[in-house]
Length: 465
Ligand code: BG6
Image 1 (cartoon, rainbow, N blue to C red):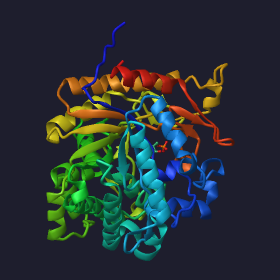
Image 2: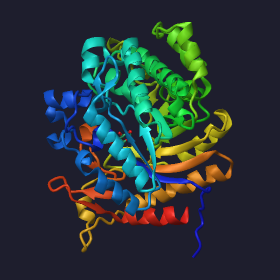
Image 3: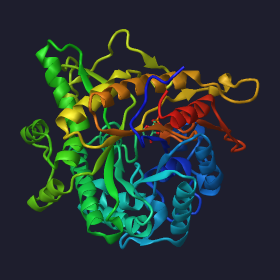
């Protein structure tokens, strides 16, 4: 039978991980906020599993990358750890072993016929920069990030042609300063807002630097955003619609608009000014943001967000939070991934495609993460010892069908990356939920291709399914 969903020529079929979630902290010169948090509160991490070994990519990257080739991927994203590449955080001077390692990884990806996509920040702020300067609330840290970025561009820009400045920067804002799921787990709206601005500035400044370098001439630079469209409880209730608009402006468009259009959403700016929590900025910085928009966009999509007008009482003792303006809405009958507690709603990928087409200059973009985390996958091991993860294949197919529809209607999407190629460490959830095409036995580090790995190989070969 012929395939029904064929994707544009040269489409990226790939997968993504990050340095801190796959490498293990072997030989790193600095600790990031998660390394440190695990040292002081290991019990927060599922089964007490920390970042020391993760999936051992630091030691096994050659055979791991060979497995990615084996399952037919043509592109692969990981991240360069600031805490591994840089020896001197103030000057950006690189560490010899960090350089050796990332050179090895990049060369190996290319040797195996895949396009390397390198991201520069995946929640992994060096903890020293938090202790010394207050982390992302500090503009000095913004400038140190640019030095790190420049070092990476200079070292690897001859071979890496696709860069991302940040992965899911809004998650840093949420995790560190609003909802306490990243160290230093504070609730401080003012710091959250400054961090949101500083991360946008850091991205634009890194892009500005990138474009001045000879080694970047034929390279492209983007940002990876988790877009979780806000759907109102009712489209007829004006208060629900207002709540959804505010949620979109804070959680999605606060990075999407500056990254693509060089300006912050008006709704957000007005609201922050009215509430007296506006970030500190200068005209010069705003013009850097204006003039250094991205070449492409990566979109991580896992779940939608459903919201309604505020009905519960807002706890003022928390100070300013965006939650003043909305309540989350548990839509009756929503379909859930029970392990991760996230709603499954594939149509949102289509809505995102059309939003980018119509409201964001139809910028080139790709799905940079999409995936399904499942706990206890051992129960799906077949008689040959491999995991039959049909649920994951179904999940991907449903999302790809909607992506295909968006592309058919003109959205400029050039690829689909899943999260993640090889089961990896997931922050506080550690190895609770597995996402990979390839399983990892944590005790032996044995890696085996799941049924979904064989499936993606066929999809990649046929450029569709
Ligand atoms: C994305 C992140 O939010 O989702 C990854 O970029 C993360 O780092 C992935 O691992 C899956 O989420 P989680 O929380 O289940 O690991």
